[in-house]
Image (cartoon, rainbow, N blue to C red):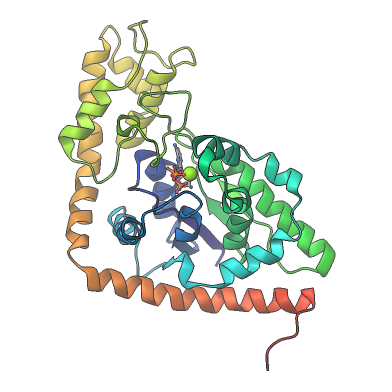
Length: 329
Ligand code: ATP
Ligand code: MG
């Protein structure tokens, strides 16, 4: 079976962006691939996190994975920090990464602008840790949003660079991006991507959010003064809403535009909000149910860590051997 790796940071609760950009494809690919899905808490601490909140959000994230339809019996679901090989491979790959490559990364530029008082080296080397995450499992395919395209390129370059220097060790992974929803945009600033760490909660919709709040955020979403429901780049706010609407209902963009021919944004937003709420309802209910079952969740990440460690350990031993590290007797 071909291998998939992907992760989400427990830096908040999951947004519609995380769901449509990543989780939804995971659920479609899980039958066909051997999948490793991770709560990447080591990535999350590249921006300041409250320890208690980080712990809570890690468990909540696991519950959200399963509520979205990730089958814990079929897949390996684990907490990144439980598998020490991630940090170790990341270090080795750091020594093959050029400063200039990391300097070009737009996520680093965006996030460092936001947290100027906390410009830490971890934020800078984030993409190398991500490459390690992926390469440790000999991953073939990485289903992510297209904000991760640049990081995926680095992971591929590092795999190739390592293979060329030390001999064939890593599979060179491919990114997998869903078409219309590879980049869900902020509801408040449609030129920015939707992010769970956005300071303005009106910018995102959370999977676990209640129906009223979801509907309110959609009604408040920034559109334009054109007033006609059309799908184009001159109406970026509306375009984003249509993409979300389409993904939540499996109606095509054309069908949706036709449905609102001659109608205003009010009607569009009202029905769209209903569709989003209906789609999310079972996810939210399952999530709330799972949160009451801590032992069940603990069992999943405990088993996950064991399976992930076995695979990661194998790759890291091979890497250390090729680099010239003497194995401990
Ligand atoms: P943060 O703001 O803390 O970085 P985030 O919302 O960007 O949070 P991540 O944990 O960084 O979420 O990313 C998890 C997955 O969700 C990745 O595959 C990423 O590409 C995807 N993703 C994040 N935001 C979007 C978006 N707006 N549209 C589509 N996919 C997204
Ligand atoms: Mg992100």
